[in-house]
Length: 330
Image 1 (cartoon, rainbow, N blue to C red):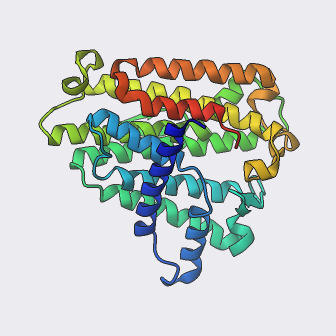
Image 2 (cartoon, rainbow, N blue to C red):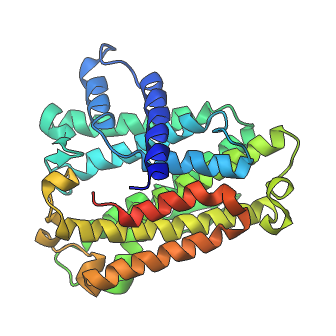
C-alpha cells in the first residue's frame, strides 16, 4: 500500500473512532445489552472508508489543509449507518452470516432480537448526530435529505412533488434478495450494486461536499470557485462532480468486492468467502468474468478521476483513496 494512502486511512480512522467513542453510549449505560451490541459491531474493525471519503471531500471543497469542523461527526454518522446495514444484512433472514470484520456477527453474540434493535438504534443515532452538526440549518437539512434518500427505497419528495429516484441502499438490498437463484443480467447487477453499495459511498462524498460548502460560506467565500478557480463552477456543479466521482468509485468498489469474494479466503476477507457464489447472487464476475470485472473497475476509477480534474492537487487524497478501492485485497 502507498505510504500516503496508509497514513490517510490511519489518520481518518482515528478521527472517526474518536468521534464514535464520544457519540456512542458507553457499555455501562442502561440498557446494557443494546449499547454493548451497538459497540460490538461498530468497533469490530473496518476501514472507515465512508467517513474518510466524507472528511476528505469536505476538506477538498472547503479548500483547507484541515478537516472542517463537524466532518468527523458526519463521518461517524455515516459509519453508524453502514454498521447498521451490516448488522441487518448478516441476520438469518437475509445473508445468514456468522462472521463480519473478522469477528462473530452481532446476532451470534447478542441474539437476533438485540441485533435487530442495535441496527435500529445505530440508524436513529446517526440521524440524531447529523441533526446536531455545527452547520447552518439549510446545510443540515440538505445533508439529511441527501443521506435519507441514499439509504431508502427510491421514493422521495422534492417540495410538494413526489418523485421517483434511483433506489437507495434498502432498495438495493431488496433487489439483491429477490435476485437470488435468478440468472443475473448486466442491468440487474449494475442496479443492485449502484443501490446497495454505491449509494452510501456516493452520499458520503456528496454530504461531505455539502458541509465543505457551508464552511466556505462561513468564511464569506460563497463557493469553491473562489478557492479552486472558475473552472470548478457553481456549488451545483461542484456537487455534481462529487456525485459522479462517488457513483463511479462506488460501483468499482463493489465490483472488486465481488472479485475478492471469489478469490480470497475468509481469513483474508474478515467475512465468509464464497457466499455470493453459494447463494447464486447477482455479481459482476458472474456476468462478465473476473478479468473483465477488474478491467471495468479500473475504467470506472479513471472516469472518477476525470470528474475531479478541475480541483487540481486538492483532489489527490480522494483520488488515492479511489485507487486503493480497486487495489485492496480485503
